[in-house]
Image 1 (cartoon, rainbow, N blue to C red):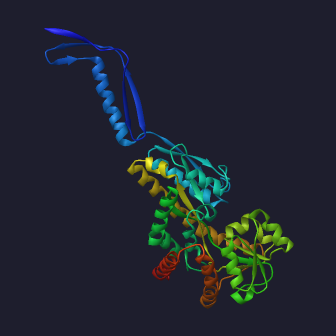
Image 2: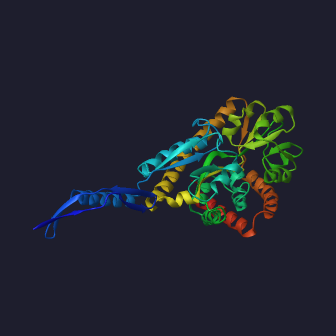
Image 3: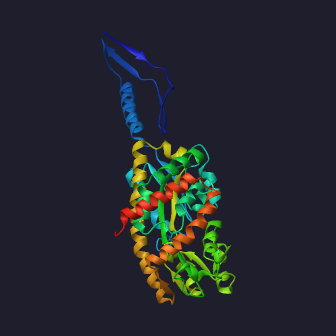
Length: 384
């Protein structure tokens, strides 16, 4: 014998897993049953639905749209940050199979460095933000970052790469940023080669040649470097630097070759000294709640994308830096590379003044760790 069972209309089932949330509404179906065998169309659809939803939840299939902010134009030739961002977002989208996608905000469209960092530090997924932060954005949260910019601490690009890729200092800094800001610090992204000295008065072969010159500095740390060489320094915004150099308000500055070209500073500067002053980098950071909402597999894909894009950016920048220096020579700048003895003079006189300034902002153990690991990185990469 058989019997018919009717189900009520309008029953609602809800499933939630990870970032997937689905509501399923089904209606009355007649189910004809004989003994324990039951053939119900509605029940069959329901079973298939549950299976598909379980698969979707397990794979974390919901798409997340990330707002990616950075400084400068969306121009890979003239902005190394965009060169990196363009590749990173492409590889991250491919690695997550489209579950994580990006919307780019160049030219600081989401606000100043400080405003973007405040946005990124907010809790909750209503701010799906990632950012390329410079020292101006990151150091107010973790001033320990300044220990990585002690002047003349790296002898080569390879040493700087080893320091940031494998060092304990960098791992501790990432953990400290998460503790204080709730954010995730993914990578130190090379943005334009080592900083070089330029000036309009004379060739700078050693610290003694700086005496009496006036330099532009970005912060008190840079001013401390100039003062240790017998020069003076004053903070001047980037947008005012060209005019300040042309009018003689200051006679020199320090920047990578890329920025000397971008700012046309070669028109008002005659001499350039390749002293490997400071490694030029910015930092890829994510809102913590956003990053933690990704599945473990997608987190790894995003980290792998950052490393791959950074390696490609490094290789491109280091070739471009050489080309840009040749360009500056063609524009009439006299370029000088100090000898080993002269570099030791720069290091011996320049580091103590900067470190003394640093001690008022950073615990001594952070300074010691950074200097120790930089020295080890220099030794491991010597001759490469």
